[in-house]
Image 1 (spheres, one colour):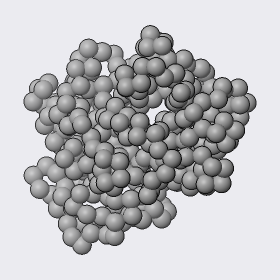
Image 2 (cartoon, one colour):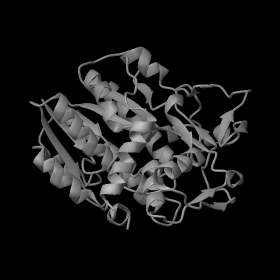
Image 3 (cartoon, one colour):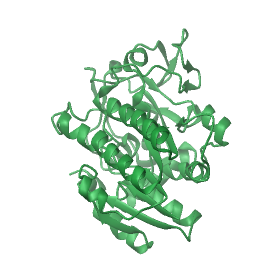
Length: 352
């Protein structure tokens, strides 16, 4: 069997390739990447040592995809993952859609030709912003806690798959939601299996250090270096909450999905959940205990698309697939911290 991983030289793609190599030593892994992210070349060298074949390819280019050999499964880990993409002045809205949507279409055409299964790593940001932004919360210590009444599809364990996906969800979220719909349509029309895993915040050692894409890794690296940090919006409390999941924990789910043609549902949440969530203020306390004190600035002006509490409920993945995360929050943060201490120039390498 041959598995194609897109965005393989990113943090998630490299982690998946490494873990799949451990679980499936006899399987051929082929990866493609456009190498536009700083730090990608470092991961390319590691993948080469692991015996993973890596090709330069831009998913926006149909000719690049047409040149790929047939495989049995595609794991799509390539995307511009920032919720501010297309509106932050760093990338255009057209670039975002070309990367995240046009690239998916080209991959689906490839799967149609090769009769390959397709697994899309989607995002929690497909869920509607308005009810999440208006979620009633109370400040408990240094963290927000959601209060009743909960909107439909929401519980004390977080956001379920039945939660609204009505716009606005951000241009980024819309590009991923449209990719989900097209993937399901292609799979049903042309007869190949499609699985969609909506991931929460992915985190771990070696994640590229950008505040808009890997907040846990960025915060720890910046705190350690005494770089400027600030709590934005929400009264400057830093009480906004996210959960964390190590991408290696997704691999047992991927293995089951690649061995299955049908299941009751095609879309599941995959996240660290309530047990692996914390606020920025709590993360700062963790850093202070590890590295010593560092002053955090405050900016009370809210940013677009910010929400106070975002935790995914993965109960459906547990029910359908028997899946649950293995690595706890402490182990994830410790892994990031060790990497940060061993790579003092990581922020400059990965996000100049």
